[in-house]
Image (cartoon, rainbow, N blue to C red; front, side, top):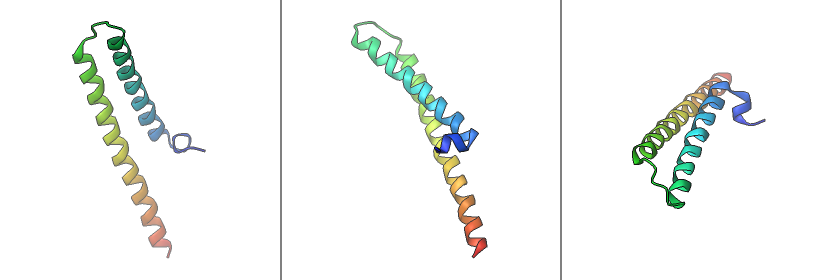
Length: 75
């Protein structure tokens, strides 16, 4: 089982990150086809992806800290 299957919060963050990444990839594909997509759309998706990545990293640190605390108390 992956971490996303075990933890619904992580699954939600992972899905949000993937969604924003798909939007960025779509923007780039449209740009490569010669279309003129809105640069603000790219920046917004990039910022959302960055914030989601930071939230995921912070959540994982808290999750790991909890496990370390339990393991240290069990000694």
